[in-house]
Length: 160
Image (tube, rainbow, N blue to C red):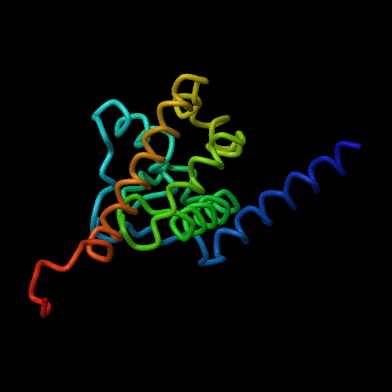
């Protein structure tokens, strides 16, 4: 039995070392912030930074485990997909705050696999309501900004 255990341990170490050679997940980049989300207040901005920005911004703090496979693969995939869905550092480029608010309301964000390692990112019911209200307000403001130029009456240059 001891021989089997020793072989298993050696095999595990060799496999762990081998997966470190897979290049995916090694490089971590944070592109520049183009336009930060217009949070209605500092408290909500801080809440979003704690619970959302790790995967949904260009301001990711890459933890030590994000450099070690296979965790590096999972972290990199989560950050890439998070940025693709909603990126608070590129606000106005396909910003879909309504979908984000709905995802939080349904309890899918932040994901439990993230909050397990980052307990400070867990949202209380009140924090969820606050973040949802802020996202909905930002969506309304963005919609008003897009629509404001289309619905304004003509200022009188037309023939009367």
